[in-house]
Image (cartoon, rainbow, N blue to C red):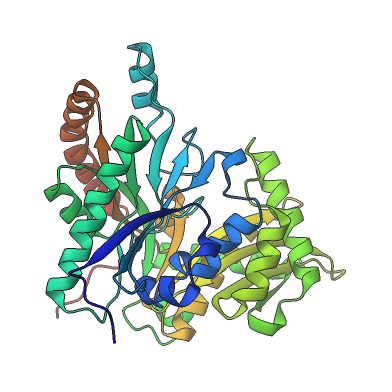
Length: 392
């Protein structure tokens, strides 16, 4: 039985390994793999999300009077704005030109992971009234952390909409963004999905898939025990190649992939591509949730026409349909995803700004940005590849 939420102790933990996985996961739930203890621990234990890389863990943990975990928030003290996918560089620049110090700041997020999910982790077996108490206590703790750390701001990125609204009630500024998701209304197979598209888009996808096959590339979908250490070694080379091509920094270490391979193999879908000689040439990493498949990282050693679309988008759709998942979330950015069945959806972030002058400026910006984002969403939907419903 869960503990009472009436007597609680809020603490900051700088290493998630210090928190029992059972207690954390009882709050995180089983649906979202990214807020599970194993994933966050892999980021820290591998040296990927640690202080020397600008991600100092400062997780909030709410305990009952006998020490059981009632709620938690994944939280980091950051010295930069990399790896977040909700861009505040302009805010930082304006504040520092005005003489302020924007960094360090606090960030409630899953590092390097632009995936909507819970940020206020609360035991689901608590009664609703006590869940509300835990949520309000965690939010108050977040605001207090800004004051105690003497930082400029706190940013909660990719929370669920219900959390976004609750944070707004506590004075957080609210921001909108756009991602592209495939929604599965119950397709029987990939051909059923294609039948829902306009003729021109259907032909385009078939041509792209056919060219990949004709190039001699073979696609394999691996999960669980099928994923071997050699697959991770090859995939890390792909990951580095992508970082090099995009002038990016490879935040994730080899140890991170090894760790999730050991602790979360059943939650991983690794799409591997081999050339005609059997040499691995590309790969796409996905994580499997209870309702969605989440595309995370992709890499390719050589140029292969349409292979990115096949490995990242079409294989993900095909797997989701076969597994009965409701959607595929293909990561940040990319209007080209629309033509491949991924439609725009709103994402959310919430921001607590300590300095009243900066807060006023950001609030004014967001008041103008939100309707512009909604208008952009409507304009993007005009390019939907799906056929109009036939109402007879």
